[in-house]
Length: 328
Image (cartoon, rainbow, N blue to C red; front, side):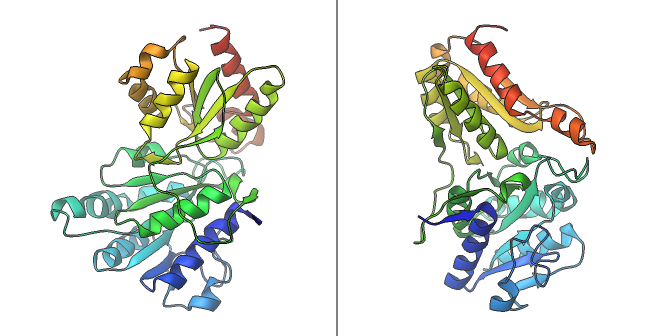
């Protein structure tokens, strides 16, 4: 299979779906001539024109509101936000309109829209442009939350998200845009709500998403040389969450560490741990479950402080060793 970047995989998914279905269009700020804040939509204006590559004013509420309205009347919009942080400006049309319309109309109304949002720290963008807000979005019934960690997953999951009849928040960690991976040339899709085992192991389960998948795999490969076997589970879709896959892995390993960049308080790690505690997998645990998360602070601008605010590979390794050695 050819290797392409995460950025390229998202670009290709949008292009393929726009060629396949004339109802699909892209809407957002600087997505046309400029090619998107992170270059994902480069070249799309030339192929699809301004009718389907819709430039907007600097108003996230307008972008998401227009996308929701278009979706309700039969279109399939992809709304791009420059940064995930700005979804907070669009919560009314997203949460009170798009997420609830299908329920309130007894299933007769559908809202097939995708909101793409670059997330996370690591680029020196400071507190207002570096947040991981997926846990907030997971709290809202009617919204699906997708967070791919590889180019293969990014393309397959975005295609499924565009075709889904519900609002989908598609979370793209900024540090992933440049990574490369194998992506099939032929058409494919990945169903939403299905987790993936990114690294098989037997001693401990690490559940994580986004850039933390890459960091956890690096730690797993390092500790393999010491005979420590780590299973890395990537939910891929945070809502709906594949709790069955997580439970199966915990049954096998008897230990669980959940890692995410979002802050600890109210983070989705607690939801994963609660799902295990409510399942038969809880009886298979050989040690208490633990979570490794971002600190409960705004993301600092200073690079050293920024790195200290979120889990790094050495932090993941330290937590794994502590669990395996029963150091609570």
